[in-house]
Length: 613
Image (cartoon, rainbow, N blue to C red):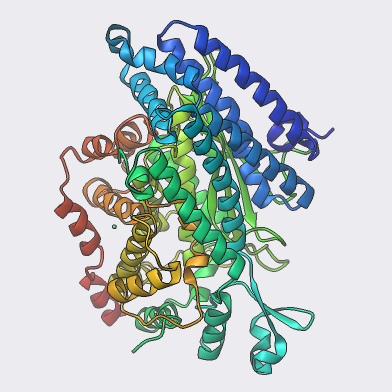
């Protein structure tokens, strides 16, 4: 019997999305009626969160299926659900009666004061959503705000999909001897990336020029998207979209740096990926993660057999996350292997957030998906990971454990549903564990001989990451500045002209004519006006690692403190207060900058180790 995707019976077929959507909307209306007719109190916030949870469980699942399911009919049905639920959410965010029920609670100082801090925080976050959606406007302008939100849903989806599509060029337009480096389709060459690792400079140049060649439709989409974002921000009372997004909360040619920095790393430190891969089989890496989580948190990762129809592809694995005393914490679905029509990106999807269900008294367990694009095992070898693949696995598992170890009462603030400039901290911190020999030595064994990965190889790998590190950081600064410029005050010039200026000012490499890199900058959707968060999160993770884990990365007491101070709260506590709780001090701007800079300092022990080997 087909149990349906993620155990949702209706999702045994694409038509089930319509059923689950209708049911969610029916439940939503009942909860809206309930909260609007109830006196202010804790139940107000609980009902708001229940309302949010009902919509998110459908929308988040659909958001994943629309990009990852191999069946196009499932993808189309899921996309329709995303738009339908998204439209309802925007209407709710401008529902005056709904807002009034929450405002009555916030205005009743006696009742509000009796709420616990987490409940007060969630109430304020829901009110913040009303405010930035234009609840204070008159009815006509509120409807205009909803229309803009709905239009943005379509534009966001169009840009995200388009930013990952390959570009085509006639085979006859490029030399035949480099055809073998690209995918072919009839008389066309398909170019779906920059081929930055290729040692052939013509391959890199062709890939750069063709993959980034301006797409008129996508350019129009981006221009319209930025206009809509600005119009919406101005409509609801902000100077620009960036002001709205940040309310309440870092002679070469441009196709050369990734390749030459890779060559430098390989030549200086002998870090050819093929030398490392035999030590990083997928199985051993998963065992290493299990061992690390057991030592830090008392948590084990256990494989479970999914029910019929529960997963969307045969090679998807289901993992149960179990605490030694607390029991089952949640589920992680691992969609790890490459397949046709699957996005070539590593990411974490929340399918269902954790929350305390007042109606049943049970805790709703979180469910997430980790999506990677790893090679399949062969008859002669298991799936072997390059160092970067291994680090990406640890990075994404950091997101997953953030979701698993959080125990918030409300799903609105569960796990990774926190401030953007904090969301990457747990995942980036995991990268430090992934390159520490004391951790790596727990699992890195040659899949044929069983020999451990030599310490000198781990040291060289760590040092190689610092090669061109300053240039990599500068690139992130350029991306962050470009993002802010796009979402600041509107300028009467094209996004490409803005890119040229920002690239000259913040990066230094010349702009290549007839390219539009911004059309591949898909982070403009999820991180609009907040791309700087990557640098901020890296600085925080660096400070936490150096102060709390560098002496002993397997220390249980420190792991428990990290869970208690940073992971458990999700978005229920101000990020800086969580950082202060972990570091037991208040960091300054200088501390953040210093953390990024000192990460680039060379480790002279590695040079000594190499010279004596």
